[in-house]
Structures are given as structure tokens and as C-alpha cells.
Amino acid sequence: MRVLVVEDEPLMAGAIRDGLRLEAIAADVAHDGDSALRLLGVNDYDIAVLDRDVPGTSGDEVARRIVASGSGMPILMLTAADRLDDKASGFELGADDYLTKPFELQELVLRLRALDRRRAHSRPPVREVAGLRVDPFRREVFRDGRYIALTRKQFAVLEVLVAAEGGVVSAEDLLRQAWDEHADPFTNAVRITISGLRKRLGEPGVIATVPGVGYRIDAP
Image (cartoon, rainbow, N blue to C red; front, top):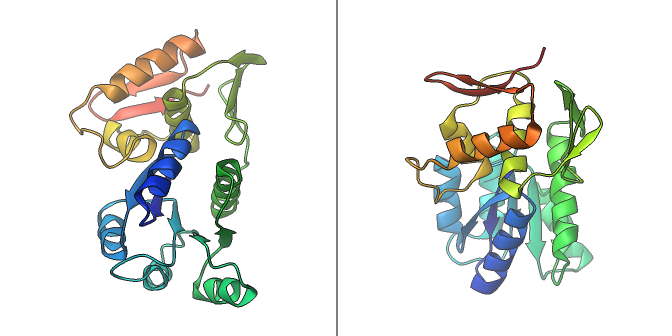
């Protein structure tokens, strides 16, 4: 999952970004509405975490443009405005969820997971393929009933590959979905992570390399 966090308070924005990354959720940060619109124009995000009170283009206007784009991207409004009228106006703008400050990071993570599940409601929340059982909410992976301990990045990459349902995922797409906008497109991070992931998953191998194209789950 990749999210855009629009929050003007640097310490809070950084804490959210780092906390989400610990949960294998890639997060980019915009400190104002104009930067948010720029990032939305060049990157694909699964969810927007949006503070309504940000400099430049307002958070409300960012929400309006997301809705008008027809992308269907869920919006979680994160704000100190906790009156019922504030919440009602936020939902009228197109918010799918509303979390008021202060909040626990784990609650934000649970709400993001729930929004992602709703966004892809046709997909089961727990995926099973090629003997693998991948639970995105618990961040657990089992192979033929045996628990597999993965790093956060390995789990994020596996989650993207499993979600492709046998389709080929390029290294560029893996970088875009499992890392963030600051990832170096020429890095070996994807290859190294795939190599480590293969070792953790064991034999027979379930991740196939399609030369010159990318990677896919090699389901029987």
C-alpha cells in the first residue's frame, strides 16, 4: 500500500511517515496543498491522509480535486477539528473516514488497512496462492502452514506480487508501490529484496523472474 500524507506540521508528518513505514506502508509527505497536488499528479497512491488545515491550496480543495478526478482514491481526513459539523462537512467533501487529533498511530494503521480492503472489496483480505497465506492486517505469511518471518520491506514486496494475481510486476512498479518517491530508480534494492525474500520463502521457489520485464508469483 502507498499513501500520501498531507500534514503541515513537520514533526507529526515525519512521525506518521516513519510509523507507517514500520508497518510496511510506503508513505510520501506533502506539507502544503500545492505540493500535495503536485505529488498526486505524478504518483499513484492508494489512499490520501489529508489534514484539512494546510498552507496553500486548502485540504478541502485537495479533497475536491481527488473526488473530481474520478480515481476513487479513498480519503482519510486527519484533523483537530472534531465538532460534528466539521465531520459532516468533511464527509460531504468526499472523505471516506475521519480521524481527529490526537490519535494513536495503530488506529491510523487499522483504518488505512480497512480503507484499502474496502477499495479492493473484490479481493479477499487474506490471500492464498502457491501454498502461501498472506495476511496484510497481521503482516503474517505462512507457507504450507509454516510461519515465515519476513522483514517489513520483504513483506511489502510480497504483498504487491501476490496482489498482481500471477501478473508480472516490473521493478519500477515495485519501487513505486513498496518504497516511496525518494527511492533511487537505479538502486539494486528491488533485486536484493527479492533475493532475500526467495531465501526466506524456501524451496521450491515461488517467485519467478521474467527477463527484461519483472517478477511474478509462479503459482502451479
